[in-house]
Length: 186
Image 1 (cartoon, rainbow, N blue to C red):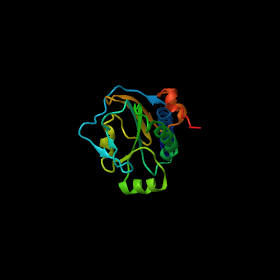
Image 2 (cartoon, one colour):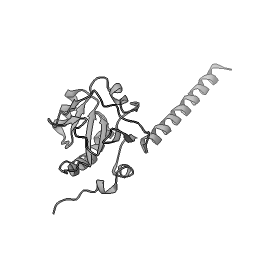
Image 3 (cartoon, one colour):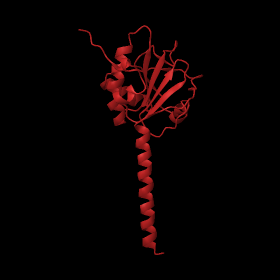
Image 4 (spheres, rainbow, N blue to C red):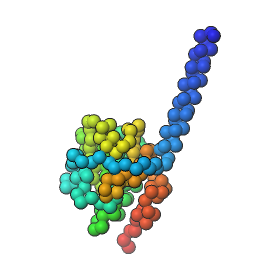
C-alpha cells in the first residue's frame, strides 16, 4: 500500500476517534451520573480563603453539600458562579442548613485570591493547589476537565456527579425544585 494511502487512513481514523471522544465527553458533560460511593474525607481539613471560619468538610455536616471543582482560568466555571451564588444566598442564613454550597479551586492560592478580589463569591472557596488529581480521586472521579459538581449527603455519600457546565435546568434534575426558587423580600 502506498505511503499516501496509509497516511490518509491514519488521518481518517484519528478524526473518527476524535469525533467519538468529543461526543462521549459532550454526553457526560450534559447529564448527571450517579454511582454509589462514599467520599473519602477522613484526614482532610481545608480552610476557606474567603470565609475565615468555614471548614471543609463542615462540622456539623449539612443535609446536603454541593461541591463545585473549578479554576479561575476556566471560562465554563466562571459562567456557573452566579448560579452557585444564588443558591448560597438562599441557604446561608437558614438554620436547618438543607444545602451548603462549596467551591474547591484547583489552582494556586495567589490566582484564586486575585480572582476573588475582582468577583463577589458568597460561598466558601477552598484551594487545592498541589496534588489535585489525588484530592479529586477522594470523590471517586477522574479529573478529565472542569467544572465538576458533586452532591453529597450528610454521610458523605455521593448522590450525583456532573461533569461540565451546570445550569439551573440541569441542577433541577437532581435538587428539589423548591431549593432552586429564590424568594426576594418585598
